[in-house]
Image 1 (cartoon, rainbow, N blue to C red):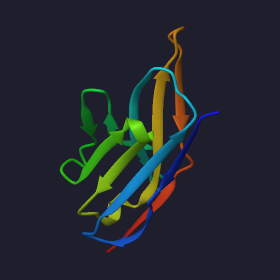
Image 2: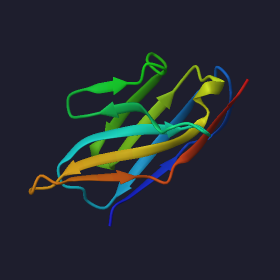
Image 3: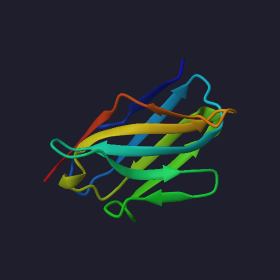
Image 4: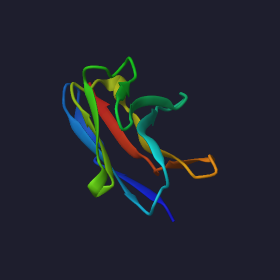
Length: 119
């Protein structure tokens, strides 16, 4: 059974930094992407950053401030967040997508970790 467990959230002042980690247990066949999403109160979940075997992409609001990376040996995907703003306050979710041999996509989510940025 696959589990994604996020950690590293917390309370930080504006301008500060946090590092989120997501550790995967269990096997996922054909991982095509890993990502971080976030959801603020009353808002839709939005994509923060994605990483594939050959590229990274970021939401416009976090470009230049956040960095996504992965360590396949440790089954970990990390989000380094710098120059944090109050509008970055949200629950951050780890996401992994895999495609099995029958070409069925499987999407996995972590339970989320709260990030709160005070002004």
